[in-house]
Length: 288
Image 1: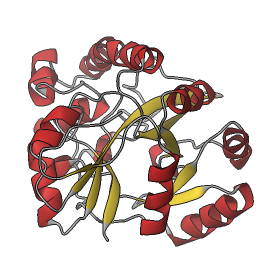
Image 2: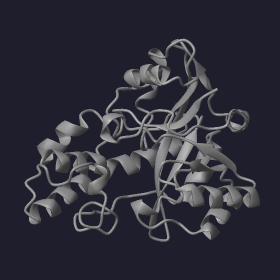
Image 3: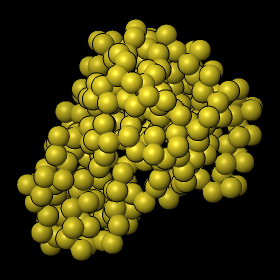
Image 4: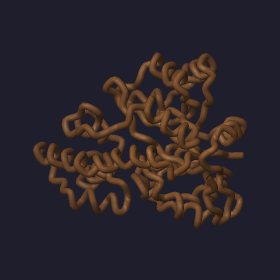
């Protein structure tokens, strides 16, 4: 089985619609794909309705968190999407995305970059606007060659000249909320140092003690030494280890299935989940 547990669609900052994403997952030879848009479950219904036979969909979300001044992302799988407290927490994060994007645009214009809200909104379309949409605008304007090049201190990286703060969840609260909603939590790309500061291993240990289920080890932002270190940490803390592409469609040069999760780990994730279950193609409904 080929299992990719971290992808994005146009419901947040990917370029594939949810229907296109599941079709592309089959074309990439995947057996299981997780749709984990940022702080939203808005793409799940379309993905389920378009789900091809032979592909299983894991519903989820990537939650924006911050601890001790450092941003981190928490992958939440198979939670009850109707859980009121978790839904409200996601909504608070999404509501702050537009003011944050407008502030980044204001700072960019002060740096003589002629980006506009209309341009960023066009790029975001129906998705939840975020930094990648502002970054894509910088690519359109020829300011940077790629979206990844916008995530630096010179531009939109954390603490960068055009960065702006946003509301983010406390990860300990996020773990509690996801578990209360019957879901499973995995710390996304915990050693992605090129994105900025990362949380220390002591924080990962504290999160494990609070109920964190796993860490994403095999990710293209982790080099071989980082992966080895994370596997050792996972053994020490009795955490699951996953692998994923973090696919965003054409916005980033990463293919579906670039990194994958061991089937035994996937099986354990599904065993732990009580809020929802993986959806087999074609066109099933998310059960709770």
